[in-house]
Image (cartoon, rainbow, N blue to C red; front, side, top):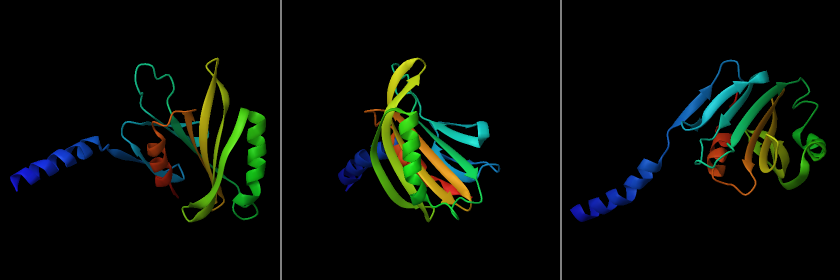
Length: 175
């Protein structure tokens, strides 16, 4: 019996120690709440855009993966305009603004029980004078005359924080 206990302890302890603590982002002036790991940094920037930035992945990590969330209000959002109707316009706009734009996926789903779309695409950006290939996952949703846009940006080929980013995106609750 004691041997079984120690064996279970050895198997379970690494799982417990690898668990990270999470914080809750809630700001009365922002139209959502979200959960994010304590090791990530959150900032509110211009136009009340909220950024969650990953920790460093080591000495040679010059790029911090991040999620930014913006909320815009317009009476037409969700009433006159439907998410499926605007996706092609969004994609055309992305093609014009991102070098080497490459749409990888277009998925429709429910986000806070509202119609939403996930666009996954790649492209090249000039970051600090260096041409950088990135992979972007973007969620769009109209809810109560608001447009919610959540964008996860990572380097192309780097998926270190993908699972954490998905958990953050899924935790976003509209207000």
